[in-house]
Image 1 (spheres, rainbow, N blue to C red):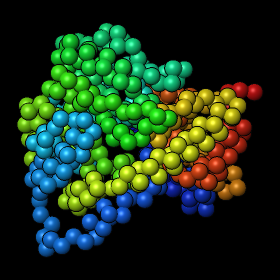
Image 2 (cartoon, rainbow, N blue to C red; image 1 turned 90 degrees about the vertical axis):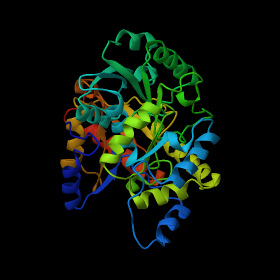
Image 3 (cartoon, rainbow, N blue to C red; image 1 turned 45 degrees about the horizontal axis):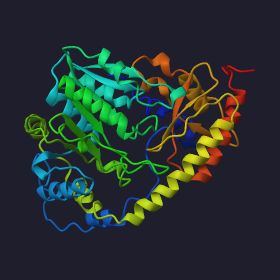
Image 4 (tube, rainbow, N blue to C red; image 1 turned 60 degrees about the vertical axis):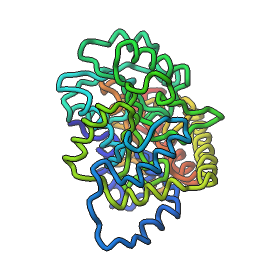
Length: 390
């Protein structure tokens, strides 16, 4: 089981803080956006005298309300086609365990969310990567590259859109090409849509769930963590019209008894969050993204494509090794008693050497803090012993 590239440097950050340094956390997707007040109130005002187990698939009232939410998004699902899970993470694990045996394979565009690798290892499944690259903004690789990798052991293709860690948003055309490939070879298309609401510059999210004739092949992974800035409640969902997948996944859900009760209460109430909340969040993230990407690309030797969604960016840095650089930032560097914590991109690739020049940066801090963090990063790059440009 690999260490998390997002969390493995925590001991160094803790030591920096013990020294009295301010650490700007750009390593983890923990938004500072307030959780919707109505969602918090629902938990505060709980009146039940006993916190009971729920149905293993989740509270029926929540699943019905969530089904209506998806229907508004154009997904033809009902509550029997939804499992509430302990975060999107558990939904991914259930999806893989319910559809693949030990030794089977899934194809994943890389760089990819590091925990996909961990979940696959836990299930005995092999990850087969298809590399996207920074020079093309991390766009979906040609479908022909996917097809070359399909073997009798291939069970499906796993995508994340908008993407973590790159911020790339797959277009309708890209999704439809994948849909045709999946249908041709009768594979699953696992679609992680935890960042569906975070699409910028007029770009619209398109889900494989919207493709007619692909209903039995698509498994949607969802989460309240980012949509409602509620990462700690650990509530997600597995959604599919494939009854066999639901039946198999429910066995895993029964084995862990039930998803978190308080989280379900919050998640159900959060569905009523007014559009004004998301409009404000959108404006905030657009401002942060535009500042961050502009600041990075002004730095000598730094390259950063403009993300179309989520709240992450991959930046290529003029350093010898971003794992060493990220640790050095915390252990050896400070500017005005401040430093920055980033996630080395090596942990987002199947071959760590592919990410040795890149870092993932989460723009989850207010712009005022991002300005200070970028000033620290720029100064750090000028004095880092492993700098690779004169």
